[in-house]
Image 1 (cartoon, helix red, strand yellow):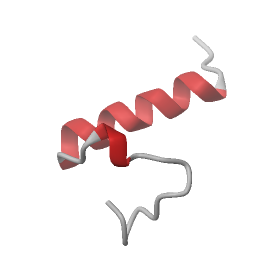
Image 2 (cartoon, helix red, strand yellow; image 1 turned 30 degrees about the vertical axis):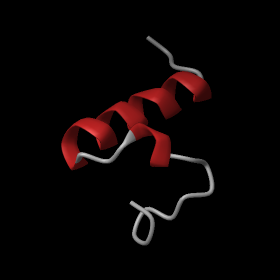
Image 3 (cartoon, helix red, strand yellow; image 1 turned 90 degrees about the vertical axis):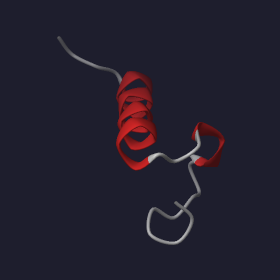
Image 4 (cartoon, helix red, strand yellow; image 1 turned 135 degrees about the vertical axis):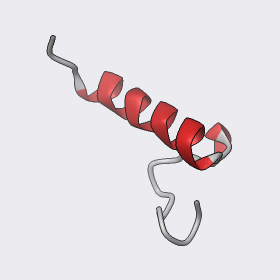
Amino acid sequence: MAMDMKQLEEKVKDIIVEELGVERDKLTSDASFMEDL
């Protein structure tokens, strides 16, 4: 099953929200993983 970039982005966001407890609205394309999340 191939994923397009949008599907991959959503999957990564799902993992970050679930595993790190980050609020989904903080996950923007310009957010720094180390500084903002």
